Image (cartoon, rainbow, N blue to C red):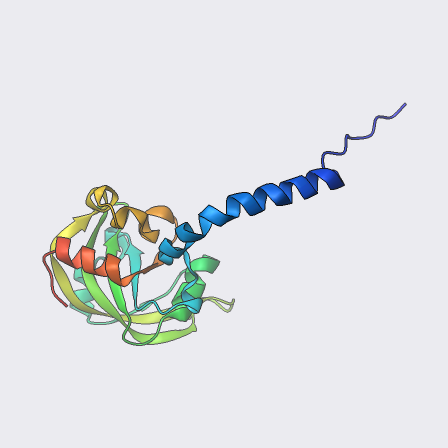
Length: 181
């Protein structure tokens, strides 16, 4: 005799779950309004992003020396889509990852997304130019300890190389860095 797997979902369970979801959904609505950084960049008006780079691969000092660079090699769909949402002139917080673990400089998008020249596949690149080095780098530990910045996409989506930044987060980073635009 062959046993059939037990059916785990029934019509009455689904109806009960729907009622439970409706009750739980009502208080959750205000929380969604405060999670601005979780919106997709294409559907909102972000004007600033965090861009990560290992300093031994391409440091902010190297960007300052070069004056402009192609930002290519992004191989994550979410990061690629974020690159594609960037407009010329958008601000970038330059973050040193793996070593340093700190936001060290300000840059801007010099050219909007175009085909990544390192591949024939559907990946994008942008051109980046430096604005200036932060007076005081803002460490990841400081970001995680800050009540507002601890909710940044940089912290919550730590595996993504390009993430959006809200105006309030940008203002907090600049204040901590003792830097003006």
